[in-house]
Length: 519
Ligand code: CTP
Ligand code: MG
Image 1 (spheres, rainbow, N blue to C red):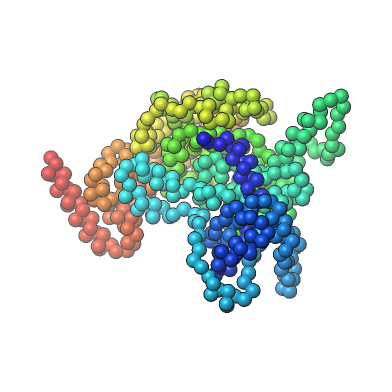
Image 2 (image 1 turned 180 degrees about the horizontal axis):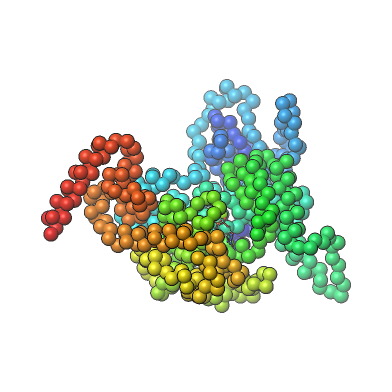
């Protein structure tokens, strides 16, 4: 049984509060470290990973074990540097007698926090037996791992420790790709400060014949308040946060935020203030991602394809974003016959009382209990869906139509942006407003070329030729896809030009021979 989005969030945040992170010496006896920590409480789980040195993430069973540990450990001596006496849940573990203790070193398992390079992925894909299985291989290699998700929630929980110095009821929650089931290893952590608890209490107090409220500083706009809060928390992280570096306050953006790099976990983080609609769109994508296993597989393949061909970019600009691409895939899946996922309106019909949410005048109600959504009767394979996706968007009338997940059908564009994708909740916002005409045209051209490659593809032939086939062939920049270069990319031979030239000659004559035989 799949958990609801809210259940996952609550569980993960609670788990993160019982978690610490320890930087370890290069030579480590894992068992002894755990023994040492166990004197403060039962360790529920742990793992080690590499991030500029070995780190151990330790989850205690009880939160108070951390307080016990914090009481017992020292503060760095201030000989060379003066330290800011902020006590966090980040520690350094040291050997008192490095030479003799290093001898007790035992081999450790390090859990990977990044995905394999595309060229290694392409090689793996070539050994699969169908495009469908290639797509699941890609998904498995790129998706967030259990360990990486824990680390993301820990990063949020560590930022919360700062926010709480000012706002004791506040929570820092991740949203976006860290939690919407479409996150890829290495993606940023989007987090926001949530003061929701305070609001809940306010509604309770209003019952009865009297009313009381806090005296609070009043500001002309919510935006201004958010800017002030973020500015202060940003300074706090900058001045006191262990391992928080490259802090950038971007307070004039439509959605003000603080960007920083969190070295202990290795994440690039974007912190904003309570954005309930963004969390609702994360939940919507979570539901879609959980409903059918083909959904995530298709999204990961399309995103990887877009990245390889320069359609998306980690720097901000006129490119299509991963978020827009994901919504486009959802729309395509709604348009299949029978549909693979329901429209937002259909999910709203299934909502019960507790699912009713109106945020800032926008109706964000939809079902949270996944078991209430009837599974699809569509049985198309991913092989078919991948090709059809490119076919569909290669021929989409972007000039006239817009993409609307709420209705699950093309709607006339309300204004002239080249690509118009409705925000599923804030219905007057275009989530792809940034995309310009040339970028859209590039997308369409690539989609057409890809659809064509998939159609003409002769898998058996390509496998005999030991050429990348299916999804693998789509993950090589198209300009470079003549035989010899492709073989180079796959084998990683590099500059052995002559050998590959000979190879490709052999292959070409072999394949033309075979073709002649077939005729
Ligand atoms: N968002 C939105 N409208 C936009 C951009 C973003 O509502 N125009 C919300 C979405 O909920 C999105 C989240 O903000 O998931 C985070 O945005 P972003 O980091 O750009 O996208 P991710 O989904 O996190 O994808 P990526 O892995 O590329 O970061
Ligand atoms: Mg993101």
